[in-house]
Length: 82
Image (cartoon, rainbow, N blue to C red):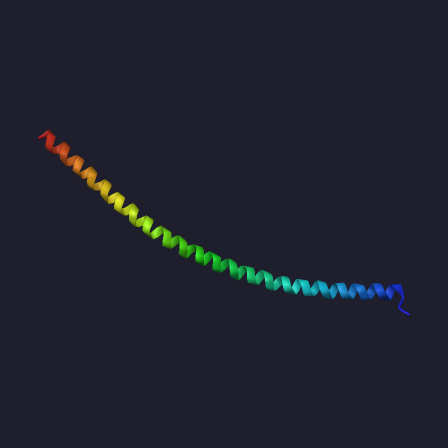
């Protein structure tokens, strides 16, 4: 017959084994999450580049237009003074 102490020792061993299995799986889950986060970060960077490229082009075009308007206004003021 199995005594109560033998049963408790057996349960402790079983719990320890299950805990080791859970920790082993957690290691793989964490590694997979890190890989997934790197991929998401890379995709986010690429999307940001795709969005920012046209915006920077529009910004440079608007800056060019503003510079042209300022030059035209300076020329008009200069011509009116003469």
